[in-house]
Amino acid sequence: MASSLGLAATRQLVATARAVSSGRTAIVRNFAGFGFVRTYAAAAATTKRTAASAAKKTSASAKKPAAKKTTAAAKKTSATKAKAKAGTKTKTVKAKAKPTTAATKKKKAAPTEEVLLKRQRLELKKAGLFTEPKQLAENPWPVFVTEKTTGKSISLEDNKSRMNLLSAEYKALSPSQKQHYEQQAEKNKATNAANYKAWVNSLSVDEVRTANNARKLLKSKFQYPTKQLKLIHDDRQPKRPLTAFILFTKEKWNSGAVDPSKPLLETTRGIADEWKSLSPEARKPYLDLAVSDLQRYEKDIGQLGWTMRAPQKERASARA
Image 1 (cartoon, helix red, strand yellow):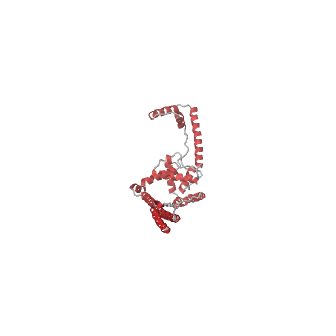
Image 2 (cartoon, one colour; image 1 turned 135 degrees about the vertical axis):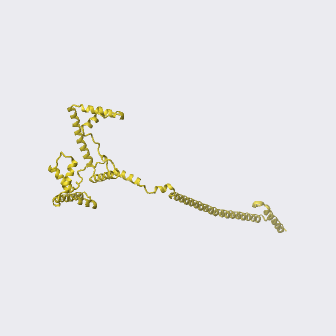
Image 3 (spheres, rainbow, N blue to C red; image 1 turned 120 degrees about the vertical axis):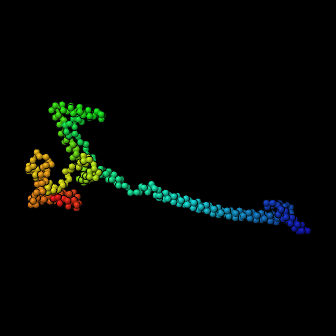
C-alpha cells in the first residue's frame, strides 16, 4: 500500500513540476520520493538552460557574419563610388584641357607679317647695342649754351627769344672769354674719346661686329635715321680690303697731284675718268695690291674664327 501511495505521490509531483513556470523546482517534504523529484526537476531546468544558451549562440553567430558581410559590401560599394567619382573628375579635367574654343585656335594661328617685322626690328635694336656713353659738347658755342641753360627751365614759347639773347651774348664775348669755352670744348672732346674707347673695349670683337650688322639692317630695311645708326668704331676689327680703284685714288691724293682748291665732286670725277682711261698694264700694279690686301683680310678674320661668305668673297675678288 505504501508503494502504491508513493507512486501516486510521485505522479502528482511530476505533474506539479511541469505546471510550475520558468522551471522552478517544487519543494516537497516528508515523503519518500523527494530525492527523485528534485533530481528530475533539476535535470529539466538544466536542459532548458542549455537549449536557451545554444539558441543565443546560434543567433549571435548568425548575426555576426551577416554584419561583417554587410560592412564589407558597404565598403566595396563606397570604394566603387569613389573610383567612379575620381574617373568622372579625371575625364572632366581632360575634357576641359582640350582646346575647343575659337580663342584658343586664334592663339595658335601664325603671326602676321607686320608682327614678324616688329619682332625683327626690336631684336635688331637690341643687338645694335645703342648704349654709347652720352657725349659732351665738343664746340665752344654748345659749351656756352649748356653752361648758360643748365638748371634753368625754358618754355617753348621763350626758347627762340632766349636763343637770340644767348647768341648776342656769345658774340659780345672777349677773346679771353671765348678761349675759356674753346678750352672746355677740347677737354670735352678728350673725355668723349676716352669714354667711348672704354665702352668699346668693354665689348667683345664679335659683339661689335654683330651690332654693326644689326645697325646696317635697321638702316637698309627699316629706314632708321643715319645719325642714330652710326657704326661702332673699333680698332680691333680687321680692316676691310681696298679695291684697286680706291688704292689708285689714295695714291693720287697722297702724291699731291690733286688740286685741293677744286670742288670735291669735280676732283672725284676727274680721278674716275683717269682710271677708266688706264690700260690693263697700267692697272695691274693696283690690281695686285688689291688681291694682296684681300688675302690679308681673309687671314685677319680667320684668326678671329670668322669666314667670308661665298658671294661676299666673289664680289671682293671682282672689285680687286
